[in-house]
Length: 193
Image (cartoon, rainbow, N blue to C red; front, top):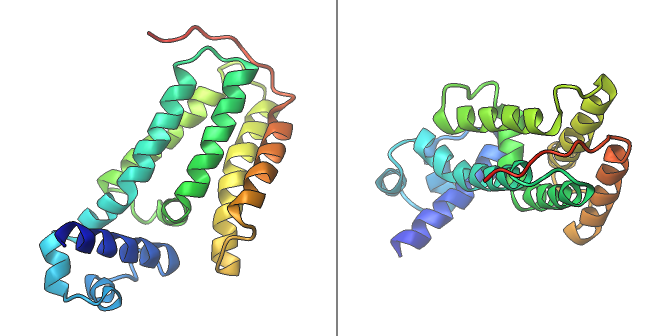
């Protein structure tokens, strides 16, 4: 029962954080929506910040897995395609978490999970754009990855929902991201041991 209650509270919190924002969501709001008392929420989570960390950690952990898989393999067309597929799967699986992070990261700086996510985004940017990458290539990567993420978030922000079902969205994202990245040269890098 306790683990299910915690899972229910995390899901309600994530939905609230994504829809009305972290600052506008209180532990009492979460308790009311979940049908629990505020003391039940505090029993499971010591604070709203702890709850945010619990909600975002699986997404940040998965982004780290996706990034590590990409940077530890030699860079080839195939590894880039696998990265695009992995990144799309990440975006679709963690849409609410991404929405929360992208739209609120600036105001949530200083919270450990947000700072960790920010460092991971910087690492992601550094790993996909080599030191000798042209400005055009840097923009292509930015538009491909950031644009895909923003498109999902904007759909939730402005339309209140995703614009397409995942089964339709996945191949469309893959096509657009692959086309954006096609002109970018692949620079072989040694695999990390």
